[in-house]
Image 1 (cartoon, helix red, strand yellow):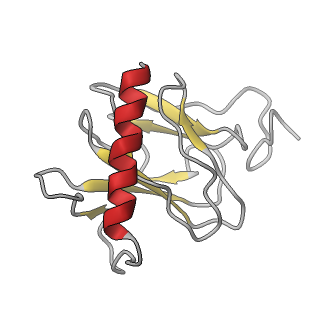
Image 2 (image 1 turned 90 degrees about the horizontal axis):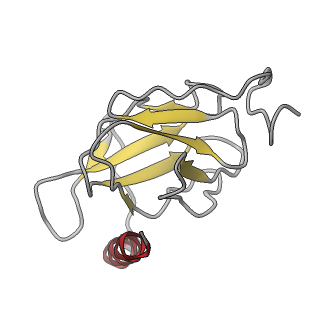
Length: 145
């Protein structure tokens, strides 16, 4: 598991070094070319500023094992995305910022959430996450505040 995280960190660092100073082109596409060539595009998941299943778009997203994913924060709050199994997570993502690319190790369906706002949930490859019980506000900060 540690080896997978180390590889993901190296891939993310390389992608940041290659893209330093550039921005993503505007447009409807949810993918950008991968750093260093290759045939898989980086998947961009937008953080919408809503709760529940509407918190991320697309949701669920389709990714292949090892494919790079970035999260673009279109909200006014900081977010921190992690897979529900804890195997992959982003650093805090400031409003208007995009996370460093993370390599998805999943070959199947898996779910994720914002660790700061437990009511923000998403999934990959057909998996649909469910907000925690008694979550009746947009983000459910830490469990229902």
